Length: 76
Image 1 (cartoon, rainbow, N blue to C red):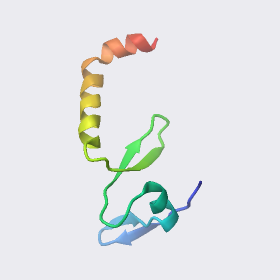
Image 2: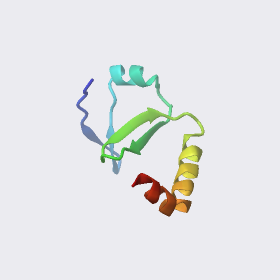
Image 3: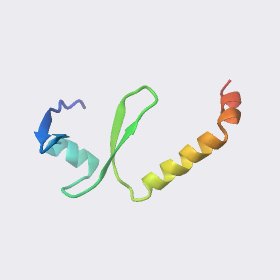
């Protein structure tokens, strides 16, 4: 599914309006929090916030930084 979105000025910021079909697929509604994450290929993914997602990502970043050299060797 590909949906074209347009940026719109909202105050001093830019915003995106998600159509009903996208909100239904995300199981999201007004007031919900969505998370924008960057994929390895440089694209972005929008997912609903699952509460502790930010904490899980912070822990993953900490582990990746702590074991950077070991992970680099394992990736060879």
